[in-house]
Image 1: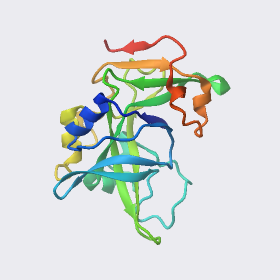
Image 2: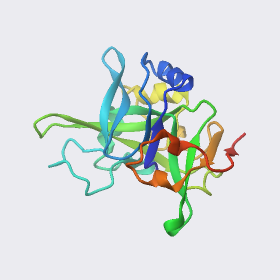
Image 3: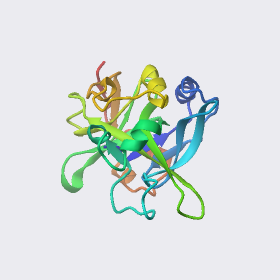
Length: 225
């Protein structure tokens, strides 16, 4: 799963945005949590666009905006048959750019948070979006797509976000092209090395937005080097 992530303005993140066709920088934000606003890259009529979306999908057909079901993540295995996700999977795919995400390893109340990123501190995560327009204002919302963890990542979590390479990002954003539920981009594998660092447990409080909470408190572990 992916329940928290971070956006830290850096040359690496700026380069990723340019690769996505966005000539802008993003303000730094730490410990972004579900239901908060996130930056979402979508394909517009004249090219890629950067939009702000609520991170918790509200399907267009939903009677109201609520959090009865956990809609901040979408399992890749069910995209083609889920009532909430199958239409966005066909026509409303997007990318959420981030610097890193956070996962918790362990059992019970002693879970250890880990910061997960790559060498560039720039990750493109597959997303789906929808627009709910039954209220006073249309609501753009999104969900992050997850897949089974790569074998190297399994000791930390059994799921991981679908991390896209530049070629995969371009294909994912092109909603004129169909992507199958069994597409290679969903395969549980490391597409590039990941670096994991333990964090202080205070990052578990979603109100803790201080970037200092992203400072490692132990040795960095590298996967796939």
